[in-house]
Every structure is written in C-alpha cells, then in structure tokens.
Image (tube, rainbow, N blue to C red; front, side):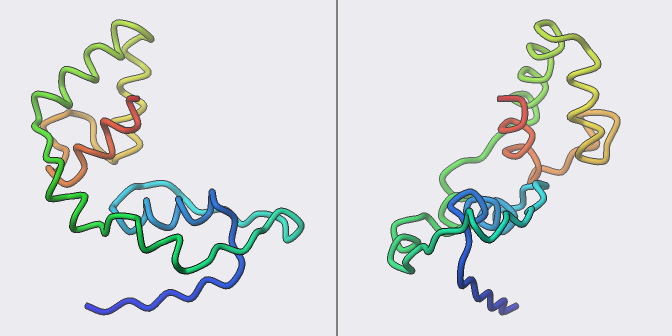
Length: 109
C-alpha cells in the first residue's frame, strides 16, 4: 500500500499527531487556527524513526498492559482503567490486539 501525504503548513503538535496516527495511535488530529501554524522543514522529519523501525524496537506483552492498567486502577480508580479500555473499543485486556499494546501503555502514562 502506498500513501502520499502532503503537508504544507502544520504545527509541531499536528505533525506529531500525524505520526502517531501512522504508528497506529487512536489520537485524532485537530486543525489549529492558521495564526498558530509554523512551517516544518522536510529535513526535520528525516531524523524521526519510521513506524516500522519503532514497532520493531519495542514489543510489549499483555502482562505489561495488564500490570500498567492494574497500577492505574489502584492509583486513580478502576473507572480510569476501564475508560482507557473503552477508548480502544474493548472491555477486557484480553480483547486488545497486540498492535494496540504500545498505544494503551502510552495512554496509561
């Protein structure tokens, strides 16, 4: 599959959101007012790891996800952990796809 994306003027935050989406995050990209945009030179993206490189470097297990959600539940209440699972469209940790583990861990913090 080939995807071509042309970005003329975006904020640094928007660039990060686009990269998160390409990496499989469920974050939504929101447009910023034109007055807050800044130009990002293409060479700034050259040093960023590709989604494939990042995925190969970090692989998480269901046990890590379960542990992180458990700690979150103890610290902030079970509803905080359930809210994250709901955000990913599941009601149990075992329903998560392995590809979602990194994003869930990122969401947990």
